[in-house]
Length: 342
Ligand SMILES: [Zn+2]
Image (cartoon, rainbow, N blue to C red; front, top):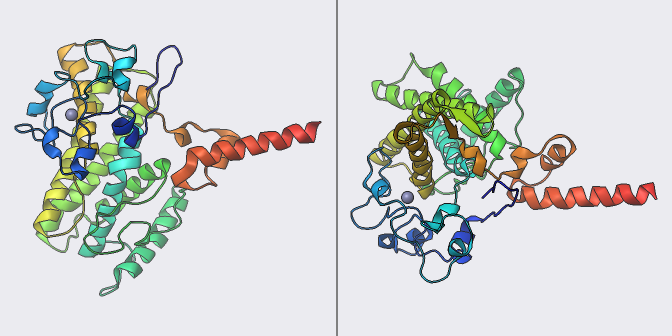
C-alpha cells in the first residue's frame, strides 16, 4: 500500500494470511476451505458466490466490504485508513497480479498450445516438445533482435515453463518486464498463422491468443504512459482491454479443459484482476469521476522502478530474489565506493 504522505506498507502474499490474520483468503483454496471465501474484499468463494465469475454482474460484487475478513484484532483494523471497511487498505499490485502472475501462465500456456497444434516457428513434424521449444526460442531471439527487445530469460525449456510432467499447470519463470515482450511475440506468431490454419477449429484459438496479447499491451501501455490519474477515455480503454484480456484467457481455458490439457489454469489472481476492473467501472460508470486513479498507485514491483545503475544490477541477479539481491549488491557497491574514496 502506498500512502499519500509517503508511508509504505507492503504485504507479501502469505503475509495477508499470517500478519493480517485473514479468515478469507486464497489460501483457503489450498486448505480445502473454499466455502470460507477466497477474497478479503468480498464473499467470493462462499456458497452462492462463485469467485470464478469475472463478469461485470458477478454476485460477489454486491457483497464487497459488507463483512470483515478477520476476527478480533487484525492488521487492517489497527491501521488508520477507513474505519467503515478497514480491509480496504489491502490493495492489489497490478504488476504482480498480471506481469508476475497470470500473464506468465498465459505465455507458457499459449506457447505449449501452439506447440501442440504445430504452429510454433521452426517446427518439424514429430519433434519432441523439448525440440519444439528450443527451435521456437531461436525464432523468438531473432524476432527480439529485429525489434530491439531484450529479455532476462535464457531460453524456452520445460523447466523454465514449470512443465516438468504432464498434468502440471505451466507458467514461465520470467521477469515482469519480460512478460509483455513475450506476449508481443505471441501476438506476432498467432497473427502469422491466421489465414493458414490447419483446422477450422484453430481459428478462434489463434484469434483469442492474438487479441488477448494485444489487449494486455494496450492495457499496460495506458498505465505506463500516464501518471497517477487517468482521464475517462483512458480508463474506459483500460476497462475494455482488461475485459478482453480476461475473456480471451477464459475462452482458452475452457478449450483446454475440453481437450484435456492443463493449460490456462484459473487462479485467484483472475478474481483480483476482476476487482481492479470493477474499481475502474465503479469510478467511470457510477461515480462519473472526471479523473480515475490508476491501479499503478498500488504497484510495488521494484525491478520495474529501477533505473540506470540499479536497473543494470537488477538484470544480473536471480528473478526470484530480485529485490533482496539488488539491494544487497547495491549496498556492497556503495561500501566499496566509500572505502575507495577514503
Ligand atoms: Zn473478491
